[in-house]
Length: 250
Length: 106
Image (cartoon, rainbow over all chains, first blue to last red; front, side, top):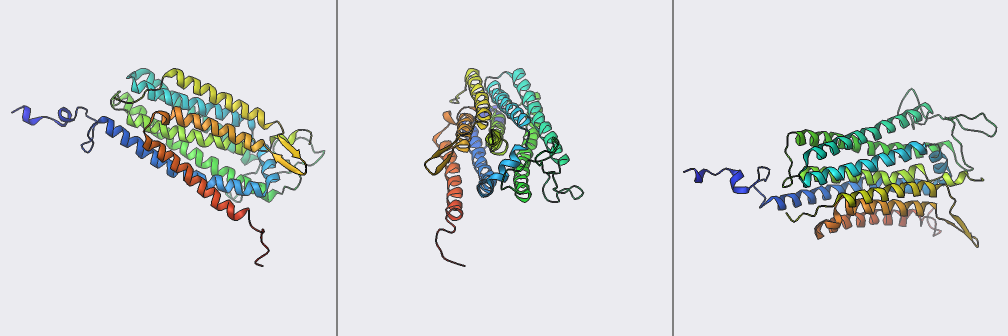
């Protein structure tokens, strides 16, 4: 009698295996494929913004260079490093799950989460600096509209003043900041969602839900995290570095 | 399990490559790669920056995201994303960049 009342676990071999999959391998592959399809839609989503960027930058190259040169290249580079390091710890978290080492896996997830939050903290600091320079475009902040100081020849140095290259106007600079805040804002939103997903992974890891047989959630959220890293890999040179070479010898 | 496990050493190597790429792109940004050939100007700063970024992204996709060890189906999905991006840019700029080429309208 006991044999005929076999549990699902005994039939399928693993408690995490859903009934509509043949085995863990098939379930894992289906999950990875689904995540990639989602990432395709994400590429399309960010692609539209990269298109807008390309279009307006090719129309107003001088203004985009002027506005870009005002961004903090040190913080931008630092954040790029932070994000790349977080991608490494995320990849290692996947690795340690695959080989069944729970302590280092949890450590890597915690590190990834801390690095992600560090990135967001630096970003918030940068945003505040733009707020102080009155570079938040339009009337997004009604009491604090877009109204930056323009640096003129012979003015005392003012970190909040923006230096306009020949042919650039403030209206065009404002357009750059619309695009800057839209793209980095959307990227930051993805980071916040990613931090939430990492918290979920952490809780489930502490409960011991993942093992070498079943680690799809770690793998899939890893894919998402690396994708957000890739978006930044393109945003960094396109937003922070585009006009730096104009500063040398005029 | 037929799943390929990427070694820690490979991950660390890719990480170093990505850091080097970041350093390289910052250093390159301060150099002026604008060339004048005859009456034509060749501005190479952005192409160089994009080349470095694309190389970095390729390493992330192939190793951190395991595409190098994934099934053909995943390759097709990734290729489809890039193909549709290409359509998005090609069709949009075939409009914007050709405006005013023909003296019609107005």
